[in-house]
Length: 318
Image (tube, rainbow, N blue to C red; front, side, top):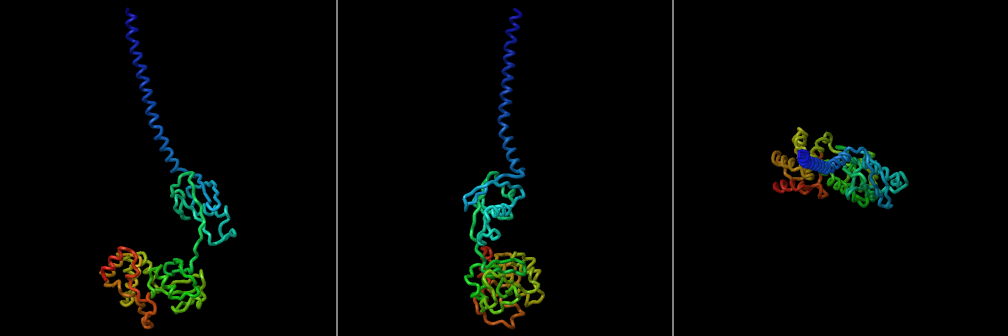
């Protein structure tokens, strides 16, 4: 009887222990399975961020060809472009046409040559499209002496028969400088003095480069005007009252062109410069001034405004 009672008492105890063990094992297995996807996901994210190199597909659309290319973190878009140019012999160095330019795009956006692939967050295995487009050559190039910037002027059908004043007007619309604040000089050092003369008189042809020169010591002043740095502009004014008035009118013209409302309001409120007042000539050239023969010589400043903020402050003062 005692043996039987012991067996009947131990059997349920053993059964309970086994069930508990199975339950614990099942719970552990379930917890592990639930955490496994999170661990693998975090590993995939880290591997993408810490990856040293990856494979991408390059689709050269003109030939409808694809090839694999290995890029690293420090690989630039320009390097991939050069590989495509050598592979398909594009460019004047390979005997191709100079007006064809290679473009690399991803997700419909053009990639600039100076960009790094690591900064673009392009996924491994992605496809980049390689296209060719016809580059429009500038009619004339202008090298600005005050900031060493090269400006490309388009839209001149015949450079030889174009007048000097027409080129100056186009340069004014690109740089924001009034016509009386600069002069043009050829590569041979010849000044384009007569506005009515055509460029053929000075030997300028399509694609040539000319220089834009301003008054001596105005480099920082004009650069600050273009950037809208009010404090630097005010510090650059001349001690001569007449030249200072001229500089303030030039600053108003440039600020209105680029929409720098802070500089415009400062000149209007603190220096009583009207936006509807023409720039006129530099005081040193007033003795040889004549009646303007082109409407842009007497163009009012508020006609050159582009930004909405500058529109409000300029219109309010008229």
